Length: 380
Image (cartoon, rainbow, N blue to C red; front, side, top):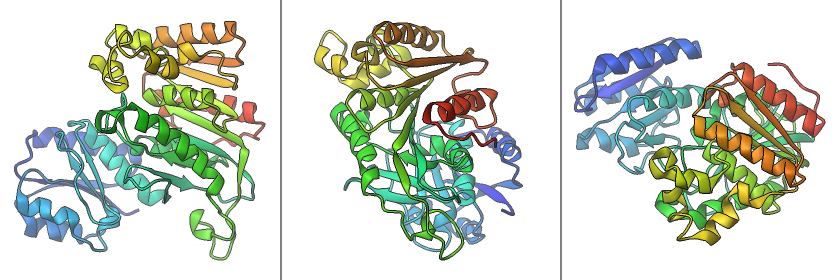
């Protein structure tokens, strides 16, 4: 990959020097040369898009610039459109991506997504009719059948956060010999809690219908080489933050899960409601406080569902939010007391170290996953 670029349209309400410093730091982290440019209108932006390199565009409010978001062309597959403010979903050309509402820090994730989806292409497979009902499948260049890692992103169940958060983990898992199924789902802030839980269950069930036989495109193998089959008896569901709760919920509901992995998960929903973590994220996601919708909490709260009856790995960074550390420690104690097979890992790292392939905590996690599934560990 020769280069990447961030293009900022005039009218974007952010300090350009700050955007540049954020972008340059991420370019360096990814090991890709990159530039940041400001354009005054649609004509300049068209020229930038024609370069065909991984591109993140901050379009701003101008109608002529935003109209380019839906324009098809060879540039689309390399383009991530990013609104730093909460705009809601926007229509983009086939192959392009729209992210929104993550503020200045969200530029980091937009750049990461633009680069990683070209470095490590995925096959997007729908498991339902809604645009958010899909999984991105990446397969290793190895013989099968291969174990499967289902990835459930976090973000306090809010729509501004999406499956791109797990791109780096998906690439790392494939290098370790896993099939990576990075699952998107409808978030409750737009579609309600029932839609979210139903989507996670449906997305995992859809794996049984994925036929990789004879399809080299699925794995990026040499032309004519069959992609490996999926070993559905060795499915690990790895959820980060809010996704940790979803991982344990789908395992408790009887999903085809051999190992449920919580990465800094929200594992005490009643406690999260009572302490208003994430500015009331739990209460908003579940549709009310625990005393108004107790049946929803009873079905969804990992603390209330023990014993889950599925082997679990609970991973927590020691420098994370103290309430999450408290929730995780108390959940593990409750699950073990109820008879569940739970391994607990708490090591140095913050909330995002658990999804950073370069972090020692992630390597500890994968050693435990490999051991639990009986997989020969590959060091990446």
